[in-house]
Amino acid sequence: MTAEPTTTPSASAAPADPGGEASRQHTLRERNLRLVARAVYDAAAAAGTRPDTVPPSRADVAAATGLTRATVSTLVDRLVAARLVAELPPAPAQRAGRPAVPLVPASRTVVGLGLEVNVDYLGVRVLDLAGEVVAEHVERGAFHDADPARTLGRLGALAADAVADVEAAGMRVAGARLALPGLVDARTGELEVAPNLGWSSLDPVPLLGLRDLPVRVANEAKLAALAELAGDVPDSFLHVSGDVGIGAAIVVDRALFLAERGWNGEVGHVVVDPAGPRCTCGARGCLEQYAGKEAVLRAAGLPADAPLADLLARLDDEDGGGTARAAVERAARALGSALADFVNLTGVSTIVLGGVYTELLPWLAPDVHAGLTERVLAAPFAAPDVRAARGGKFAALTGGAREVLRDVVADPAPWG
Image 1 (cartoon, one colour):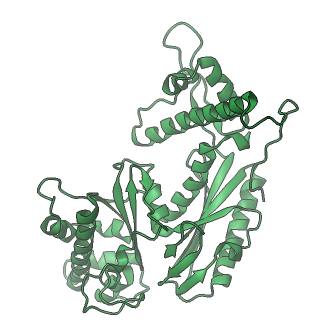
Image 2 (cartoon, one colour):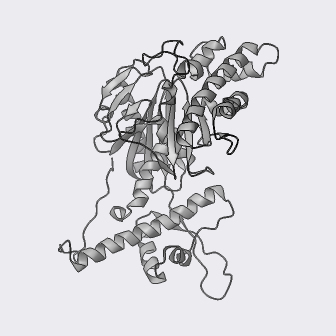
Image 3 (cartoon, one colour):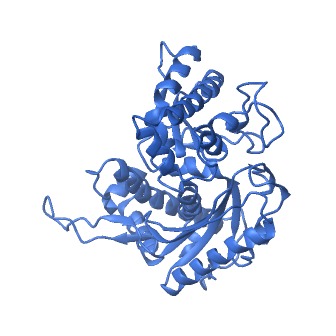
């Protein structure tokens, strides 16, 4: 497996005094290369929300970065040679002179992997720099109390197969992000506890068996939130990922707010009734016991492992759906109460509901809005905005792969 890029020094790249002129010029070149790469990728991201956006030319990049056209042209050539940027056919000339050559992220050249262990599935998704899925495998199963070594070893085998396939097709793998539904120490990458998996005090990366692939670990909800940044969302929002557990991520100015160790956002363990049922975390009355997927299914009279489609069908049943609708309304009231606390504490008033909540939103929305309107002090002046996530199914896989590729764009020099 190809993991980390290597840079071959040229004959002229003799060692220099770190404070010398050669070192300063090298640092400036790398900084300018990052600026140019970012200009191309930012334009592509804007095109995702504004379809009329035209890919930038070298002249456009020069105007956006303040660099000279000659410098930009040299740096673009370097990015093209590294297969990080691609040139489209020249656009029709609007005036005399050479037609502009549009620049876009390269397809199927450098890729990132998103990996995930969740309560009922293992997932691998491979994205390229253009944001396209080039490989994917999701394996259903029951992983509560499953052996961590066996489970992560199986996920590692799925990832190794995906890496082999994309490398055989000529792509380079930049690395992977592993999403887990629990407290992940942002400093060490260790999993402290994942109540719904029954795992604790675990270093997951070695158990994957991917020795040649750089892997970093993050909370599932946080990676799912990053998948939203490719769409039309405010710069700051709360992303709530609803499944068996309920995780959340706080995004401020388009970056994750991680606090000291990255353990924030555990909205599923906000207590909504101190006398409520016992939670897997040991406390009573946690939000997950009212609005988690299994809790809602049981309250609707369905097996805890029933597919969400069964619940949706009952909600649509005008004659026999009363129990299901009552279960969802109960969940929505609890969710509205917990989210109101969040808005009052942080002032972030946009809430993006992902996971199973995306499909349940038509039934959840009235009571969630009512809870926010009643409990949020600032609601009369800035009404909370509740919207469905647009990251799609298995959003943490997408967010994880994009994080890997974001690092490539942030430091493109080693790749060319």
